[in-house]
Length: 78
Figure 1 (cartoon, helix red, strand yellow):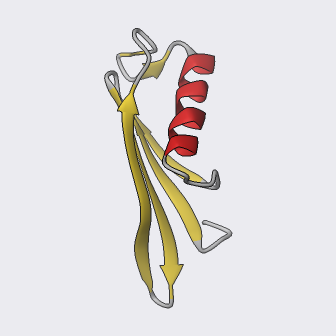
Figure 2 (cartoon, rainbow, N blue to C red):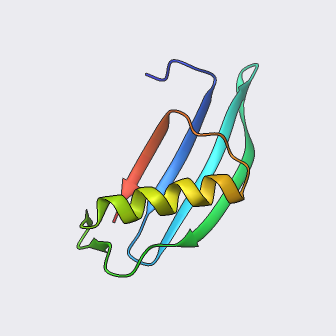
C-alpha cells in the first residue's frame, strides 16, 4: 500500500499522458493537481512502452510544467 498521504495517478496512452495528484485530507482524497500532454510519437505501442527514455522525459516535463512534485504513483499503460 502507499506509504504516504500523497499519490500520483498516471495514465500513459498511445497519444496522451495524463497525471492527477491526490493528497489524503483526513479520511478523504483531494485532487491537488492535474496535467495532460502528448505522448512522444511511436513511444507506446499495443500497451507497451517502446521508448522508455522519451516517455520518462515527457513525464518529467509534464510534472514540471504543471508544478506537480514527483512521488509515489499508480500507473496505467495502454
